[in-house]
Length: 122
Image (cartoon, rainbow, N blue to C red):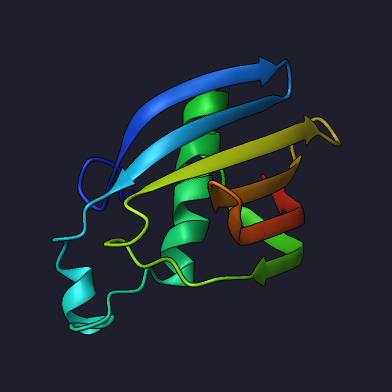
């Protein structure tokens, strides 16, 4: 879990029964940026995926594991000095009594950094 170290949740809003959003703040001084990359920090894609998982677990109040992703697109680079806060929207549905199908977007203002479509967590 990266929460409270790599990022902090600033706010969380329930949109409806199966959808919520959160605004997070990235710790631009985190050690991960020493290797990714020292003079031009970039949030690793795997960290963005982990943030979505962390938020989903918070919402569901249970541990989940990623089974597969129908489609994931990294559409822009997140530089924490230029985009210190991110908005994450997650929509989910229970599909077979134990698996959740989710869609998610990570953005800041009008820039979309990550789109996840039809990921399955169980």
